[in-house]
Image (cartoon, rainbow, N blue to C red):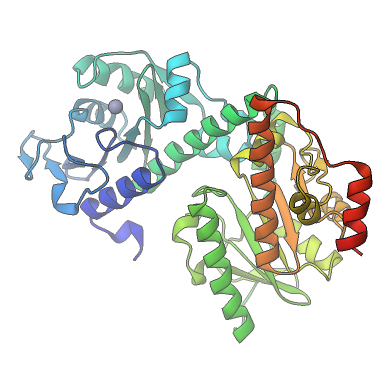
Amino acid sequence: MKFALQHPREQLVTIMQRIYSYEMTTTSGGNLSILEENGDMWITPAGVDKGTLRSDDIVCVAADGTVRGVHRPSSEYPFHRAIYERRPDIRAIVHAHPPALVSFSIIRQIPNTRMLPQAHAVCGTVGYAPYALPGSEELGQVIARTFAQGLDVVLLENHGVAAGGADLLGAFQRFETLDFCARTIIQASILGPVRPLTDEQIAQFECCRTALPEFDPITHSSRERELRQEICRIVRRAYDQRLMTSTEGTASARTGETSFLITPFGVDRKYLEIEDLVLVENGRRERGKAPSRAAHLHLTIYRDHPEIGSIISAQSPSSTAYSVTRKKLDTRTIPESYLVLRDIPLIPYGQQFGDGQPISDVLSRRTPVILIQNDAILATGATLAQAFDRLEVAEFSARALIDTTALGPMVPIGDKELEELEARFLV
Ligand SMILES: [Zn+2]
């Protein structure tokens, strides 16, 4: 069912379950609300287990303060009301205390979203609200003052984060993206300093979208329909494994010599449906649909590499830690990593834009995976399953390497052993 058509009660339960199941809140922490046109505010209750929340637990507080429902509204209701009063364009709020954002809130630093252009586009500039007593009018005022500056996400000192949006999904996406940034920066800091992007580099991302011409598909082959299902399954799985976020992650699969299916722009990766996917044929897109920003890059890769049947790119946190510190990901860890990934080159930021020709030129049978500075890891394969496996193996390798830092220096597989592996498995 389309999320926007669900009753506010259902939307709040769905998003709270999502936040709880991805370990971004505890049983007692966090609260969400939606404001209706008539001033009614639907809000999560106080003192109810967030892991088992049901739609009849949700409370409605009318504009005159009348409460309808079987529970009391969240104790943090005053700051929700204060934000809505100062920002009429905000109609939904997500607040919680996910561990990575708490880490930033207790060192009193804002996670830098400028390390990834996608994250910066989703969150914008992040605000900072000084500490005040939970549930107090004063806390409401300090948070609302920060939102009143036009900011949509605010880090709360020694507390957590609050994110607003025109709807609940928009607020959740900002919250989730900032949490992703915090988790990634924590991993990256083990490797070295995070390299933020300049204003010019961020502007490059914003202006890189040129629309492909449109066409009307006459038929949809069985193979195409099968691939639509496969792509949806893989993308939802990548989301569940936290290899993708709701707004980031691209997958495509070849349907013919000059055609492929690709994920759309702006559709939540968790709720991706087969009709959302965009067919691209002879450089034209299915009428009325917007493909991922990377459609041009995928077009170039499929044209240049007939052996490639699928491409997946994602900002999985450990691989992204390498990307934002611009460090080389050494695949000489275990035979599986070396055989599946081979050597992973680090591509300079900017080459992914336009037609992506420099990236296509780097890919080969010996180089099926690349890492793009301050962007994503891009994995190719003969099939969707192979591209996805490479994405997973890269993430596992990156995570193992980062964890190794706490234990001692890594000892790579030696040159002689690598030659032996090549001779045995890669001829
Ligand atoms: Zn709180």
